[in-house]
Amino acid sequence: MDHEHYIVDSNLQDLRIDKYLHMLIPQSSRAFIQKLLKEEKILVNGKSVKSSYKVQENDSINVTVPEPVTARIEPEKMDIDILYEDDDFLIVNKPKNLVVHPAPGHYSGTLVNGLMEHCKDHLSNINGVLRPGIVHRIDKDTTGTLIVCKNDFSHNFIAKQLKDHTITRKYIGITEGVIKDDEGVIDAPIGRHPIKRMEMSINNEHGKHAVTHYKVLRRLKQYTLAEFQLETGRTHQIRVHMASINHPLLGDEIYNHHPSKFHLQGQCLHAQTIGFIHPSTKQYVEFEAPIPEYMRHLLDILA
Image (cartoon, rainbow, N blue to C red; front, side):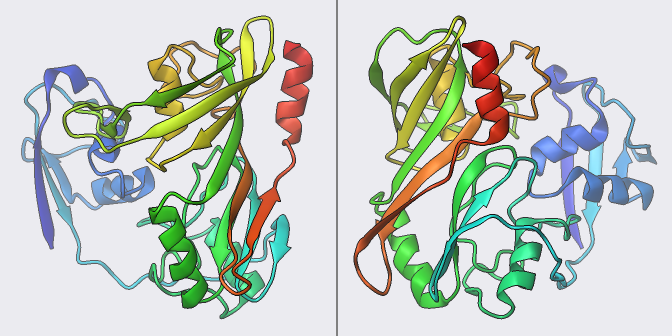
């Protein structure tokens, strides 16, 4: 058993307890936390509460997490948009609202489940049973190119390029406001937000080096279509960097504080291009995912 203890800070009071704990323990899904609440493994001031309970300042919360059970991830038939495939890797065009890999309490309906059905036993094992084949990730609501490795050699070969920041990664996205400069560079360290633990932020003291290049592709009436090229790959990097210069991504439910009137499903961000040295041929290869239909439609509206 693993035991955790939290005291609620005043600026986080009135949050639902399942949301509060998910912020503090982001590796656990809200469904998993709700399960612990039902099993009375989470006590507030010594008493069990429902998931709808709103935490109050100085609440004492004790969480008992059972010993982990070896996860059994099942293959699932899924319509996967594969842009390229050979014996070493696949390039997948990930749609919106698709989680890349399972996590505690959420073991089905992810891209990995679909990949296990498609690839059978031909996925790298380096990242364990929850993330076979996954060498990098993109957010649930970000669309576009994703590398999936079929064997450990290709996984290590491509992972080294990611670590060395030699992989080409270009995104396109729609930002709030009209960006004045035609292009620019944001060089600002990113780390965990000091208070909102499920968020990232510019963190000059404890953050990691992060660099994003941006270029205006099209100026719209109140928005901008821009290209972003990553030198580094920090969590939520583009989203945090663009919000830091007052041009958050349209639809971003975390870093954009202007409610969207377009009923969007998360941030307007698309991983359009990815390029790297092929593990077998040692030649540079590059792949591009077409702009998703929702973004094309939105650009027509915003023009």
